[in-house]
Length: 249
Length: 334
Image (cartoon, rainbow over all chains, first blue to last red; front, top):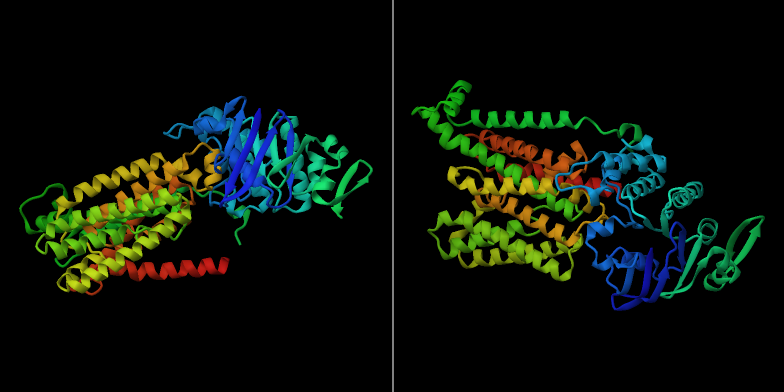
């Protein structure tokens, strides 16, 4: 699976990532958490090959930077934080997820159509397939784009703060959907999250970033046992039954 | 506010048929209307079984080339507009924004200044000027990054420099100003048929290649990060699209002059008709652009006949208010 070794990145002469090491476990949801400006989105940009970096990002032992773009797109899909709202239908958007597999004559095979239908079905937006993307709510649009990345049919999905513009109820159902994706559909997910409570509730593993470094990476249980989140974010942990939540110190 | 249940994809086939019908109607009107009254039968006879009559000569030597030129101009500028607005993710981008028109204008005025009698060389000079401007944009954007904003900013800066150079040449040689004025407003009168062959081939090639790349362009319209994630070579695709847009726009400039607003207005109308899918836009915008320029030209020829208003002026009268409405619309949505 994905292995990041000694990753360094600079933006506008400022060092953002300073030797990041991270290894993902297959079929798990790993949450990346960290304060604003700690380098979470830069890390996603490096994996997506849109931000220049030094170091190695390997997928099953192969360097992502040296792969042809279409091959890389068949292995890793990335959903950035900012999503456009084009005036195309949801089905058209989801079909764009098949781009790495479609020939120059734009022939959609039966397999491509099945992948699009399957993605719409899994995300639960089949009834919206004829709706225009620019008429959807923020949460529905996020789901439509998630369906697009599912149609891309990659083993690894990377999502950069996907619930930023969602209300609490929608955020909960969206994160439950991500849990379903890795548990039932055997996807590996790396999700940048800003909400520690949700990260602890939904992630199998947590990577904590601080000032361009990964200061902790392990299972959620190990993370809670080591009190890493309390130290890094200066928050207080509370437990109510099995539920854990955090408040500012 | 748009409602989801109103947002079902309409039957685009009906829209294509309507646009094609509008194009055929506008072409027929363009052939029928003129200083000399000709009946539809005379037009058809001149087109399909030409003889040595005056009517046949008028149709084949004057009206048909003019109709073909109007169609090519509308189609070429619309293709350029769709491509530029797509790859720069800026709905206000058009060939005159990224400096193609100003490049063509400078080479034209330089030719008029250096070789006053070389009138036949003007289309070629315009052609090379447009390509030179596009090359400068590509080189500049290549150095500072092919982001959508960089391309637009580089185009605006280059346009300012080229316009300053045009003004300077006009100052030192007042004789060229009159000839340049005609070229700068854009017009379709007196175009020799043979000058349309090369532009027609280039516009057709640009259209075909754009259609082949349309899926990738649609992906690029989702943003650079998503496009890279979906396996698109963003920098390469953006450069190819800009070259294709320049080829189409420069082809038009070479015979019609600096015809403005078509590349801006027509993609917007097409977007409202068929949505933002690049393939659908590229199928709808060229015939729509051809129909719009044909109607504008016919209007310019008939409105104050026998005085003819160049199509560029008519388009400016239509295009400029549309542009302002667009800006006001964006303001109210902001």
